[in-house]
Length: 182
Length: 132
Image 1: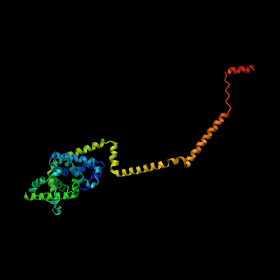
Image 2: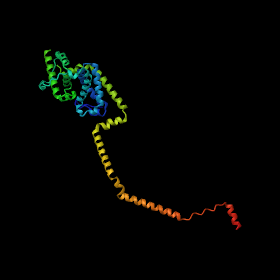
Image 3: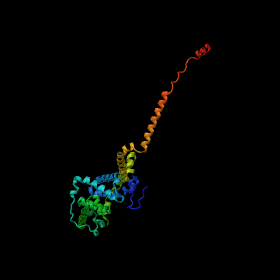
Image 4: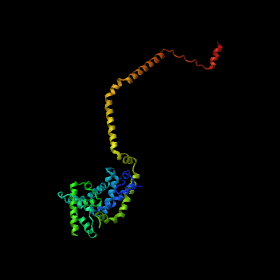
């Protein structure tokens, strides 16, 4: 029986040894955040479920490739991100992204993950998220859903750190503007 | 008021049942795969893969030892055949064996041939004795 005492003490070591109960705990912990992230990229319910399943299968097969147990979350999201990219390739995911490296760095005092969204603005927030380019939506979703650090987001999306910073800044600015107008 | 995380996850909470089912399917597949997994694959996964650096290190060490051994063997093979106490003992033993064999053959040639046995029926012998 696998016992998890806290969010950061996941049974990754036991999962490495092929313990199915440990995998159950890990999948249960990440299934909804992972699905949410994939859905935000693909905007298709069935496709997102398929990608989530493929991600779990792939994680179980390639757990040997995970270097640090503490990085399991970002590693798992990295697999999901790659699978989304494969689906997106036809739609030229990367080309849709707006590259604006001259944006200022993210101001931590106005961190979007600390925002509180009023009930009447919830729909506007979700619509604003939809309006973002996929690359920006991906960055901001990773930041919102799992509160990954900028470095972790850079690793997951295989993007330079500066690009992640500028994307997050741009997304924050866009979301803020839309929420203010709503 | 909700945080973006609560809002995002909340929007997809209805999918939890499907995700639970999906998770169970993946786990069932994993269990089945583990049961079907051949012994060699299981050994590779559990014995080699987790400590592959150690195995690579051992392999390199053995390769170095083997190469050194082969190199040393090429240089000293000829010398070992002609010199050293072991070679001298062998030569002495061979000479002694030859000498013993020669002695045995010599003794055999000097010995008188064995007289053939007087083989006759007992009844004839008895008659001869009585005639004398």
